[in-house]
Length: 179
Image 1 (tube, helix red, strand yellow):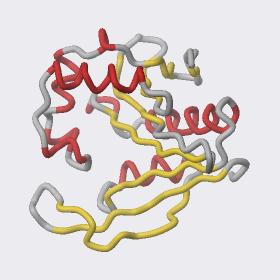
Image 2 (cartoon, helix red, strand yellow):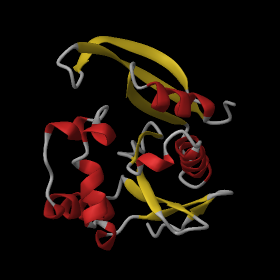
Image 3 (cartoon, rainbow, N blue to C red):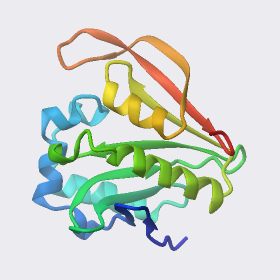
Image 4 (tube, rainbow, N blue to C red):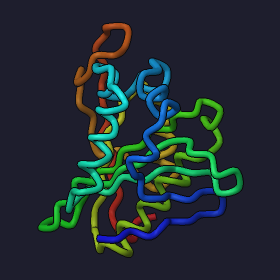
């Protein structure tokens, strides 16, 4: 499926391509502050690893990976992924990473999640979106809640945090036409 850009007031979500995998992108994925609440923190990817991930997403029939770009400056500040899409149940997961620390706390994640959610419901005809967050990741939790997601469950002692302590994770969900 050819995917057009998704535009908001401040952002452009643009299908990520292999050329977007730069040293800057690699720096995000190897920065412990950026990856603190992600599973990718357990590996040290190379540029080739990241390019292969992007290539696989682009070739996938059920996943969509977008660059989050500030419209005015054209600055690539993060990525957001939808998928895998379950066509039978018309649902998918959303994951997001804001790699540029200077973009944190500015509502960019909320805006990107809201835009991708609307696109998933309207363009793909999905009925349900889910996301998982570490319970201690207050910023991500807040972003999803502001974008209309609600907590549907808690998985107790589900993950190991960066300090080695076990922590809960939360399952968030949003249903089409839910505010």
